[in-house]
Image 1 (cartoon, rainbow, N blue to C red):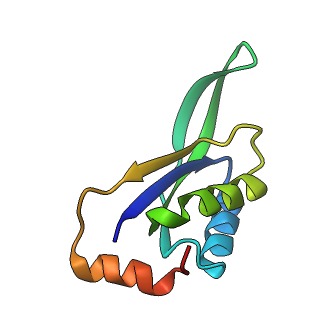
Image 2 (image 1 turned 90 degrees about the vertical axis):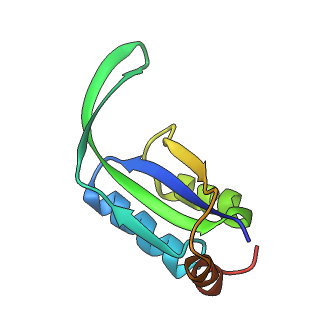
Length: 106
């Protein structure tokens, strides 16, 4: 049983909360954590941008990663949403079992 974390920065709290709620409701993720805002700097269309973003961490089965990413893309306002998949090498067995219990089969 393999689980992953998906990290995505959002432009505002409303977007982060909407993505979280939709993916939990669809049983694509078990849970989420919305972190305090961060200051992000990046180049976009040849210009240096500096924006406040709200990191969102989503936890799910590895087999649901693509479906979760597709759902995030559909809800995220960015042309190129920053969606990072992080493989989890290990976690406590009861936590992994819970993630599988509350998410749907791939």
